[in-house]
Length: 129
Image (tube, helix red, strand yellow):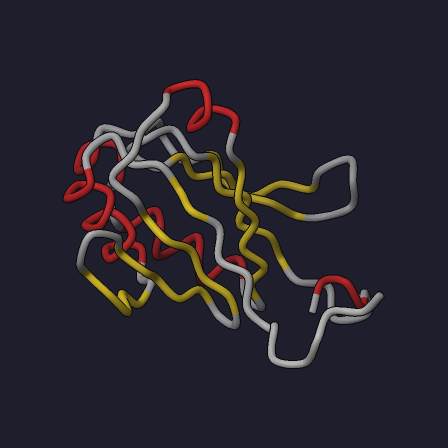
């Protein structure tokens, strides 16, 4: 069975320990906020995510997101300029390096503990698109 046409966007719900701090964090990084109400919807390229006013430490610490970018060095320069550790109390972002699974990835943890893999898109690999 195939998915019917019109189902092109999947947006995971992410936990927030502090809803306002998490919204500010994602805005600082550069995600576009599409909705700010009982939930906050952010766009990330052709996808996105929804912040909710719900927190579970185990869930947050086990959640990982991947953001594929065309220019990881430019993204990383922005991330480093934000001083996320001092501004938001998050762990120091880990700079990009080649990973055993074949992607060059930098790591950022949000204020609730969600781990983001910011990865360099490989144009020759269809599933990186």
